Length: 102
Image (tube, rainbow, N blue to C red; front, side, top):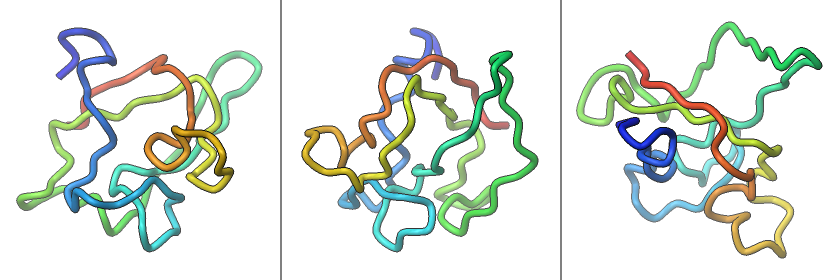
């Protein structure tokens, strides 16, 4: 849902409900923790694919119709500690772009 821009998308996709924020390679993490992307000087980011066993395209936990959000700052992947947002959002800053998967 993007009716209120990126603020409408809700929190990280976390169907397990009890996981903390982490890196894509961590066993314990939100399913929606997909890591960082690199943005060039011209503001363009690109990647060719994401492979992740926690975000299926079919079934009851499918990500089709869900949102992907780009944040303003690097995600600390729940590792830095000391900041209250590290274990929930990776202290990644505000939402600057989003779109619906599908």
